[in-house]
Length: 515
Image (cartoon, rainbow, N blue to C red; front, side, top):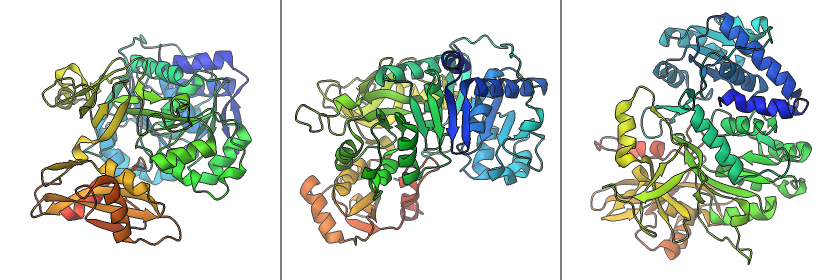
């Protein structure tokens, strides 16, 4: 099955059901299917080749989803792209991925000249939501033939379906090749780990250019309604849950914290929720308990990455709590999903036993085909016949996995390994601290020392000595930050994750290394 076949399944079983919903209106599955056919026919008529790569440069919007479906229906390859990234980063990505066609929103329409200049392989740029100077044409002017679109590729499991990118958190972005078979594994794993009691109503508030977009497309296979919010705002999300009876959504922990901190969170009717899926970073245990109390037993943990998307492991709501109502597996990201084999491996390629720390490695149909035009990086990440995630983890006797930290973020201080995530968990347990990041900074004697940067809750001041004592009581002196600094806002990547790399830069300049 092709990616578009999953949408068509939803359209067949739910033609009259709302597919895409915004404050401005609703489009049914039948209407979205018609729009996707019109966009596909427009592309084919303009010479768009089977297997050509196309990107949609837009924020969260129904027309952006329709353009993606049109690309897939024209038997193209959808390349995920983040409109919040700078023009230079987008140009680098488009050139890296051999992008043939770009749909672009008016919000970022001023980038057209730079893309023309820096990406000579782009054959057409199509204005998405209104006329834009320099574009080849405006979508609405040509997308008018909604007749059936002939299939032009075989649709085999190993056929390239979409291209993602690694985000560049550990260097320049790499293109991740994901096939029809990868998409089948993703949808199957999601449905197996989160069975829906009713047709899902999925709220897209996190950027659709990351996990929230593919998850919304996956929900369409079930005939689910997708409520599209232009951006994440805590009150808007809470109101959408109440108004549209949202059953499922994906949010990173930072967004969940912002919802929990909203003064009116408990005044909204959130009883429709079945799942809030969180991933991308560990969730502080006290905050997880708070989320279960406020939202109900709906929290769904998962672990994955671009190269093995989103659901390598899962811990569904009913496995979060034990019979006494306490966290049953505190800090766990779950057990392997239906179609993934997961192990812990040492640097020599040996599989480790319960309780032993090593790198989390994965096998199965969820794992990517490789990095686009980068066989060296593909070989490196596939050593010993397993996909290497770059995450340090451990599993217990019952098969529950725990992510300790990113392998490259580990701090070595005086010969001791310190994992930033562990220290961050201790800091976040302090009632005055809202967000934090921990890094290693140069030290003449110890090599590195632990430094923390914190955002405080509104109206709270930082008492660094008291916070240091708070952490020392939990972790001991080696892991306790030697400096704790208050910041107004921690640096973040385009995906919204806290960027330890940005925090490290000023400390490691001139050192000849960054860790």
